[in-house]
Length: 130
Image 1 (spheres, rainbow, N blue to C red):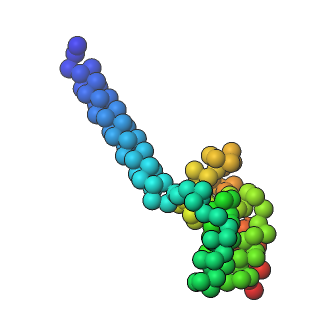
Image 2 (image 1 turned 90 degrees about the horizontal axis):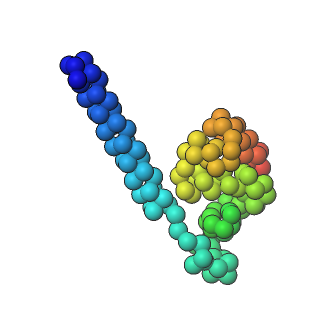
């Protein structure tokens, strides 16, 4: 091997090390984030959630199987009226902490498409609260 090809090979090895390291780091960060934010909704039943909400003067809204405790009655009613896609975005973004890009991959749309849907959802909620 010539000196030039050894340099190229060395740079490629460093590049692949960084790529693998970054991929592993991203994987473990994502896994850790899911462990922090995800929980099993099998442990909840609607009666116990309503009792808990009554005790703390918060309303319970079930968003795609996950309970949300909301103090504002108008906001709770508006969230219940969201369509399935909007509820999905709400859950993934604010409960599970996913990025717009990750949500877009799940829905089969672009990141910008998710952002547009999100802004329309915000407007619906804002208009209902006013």
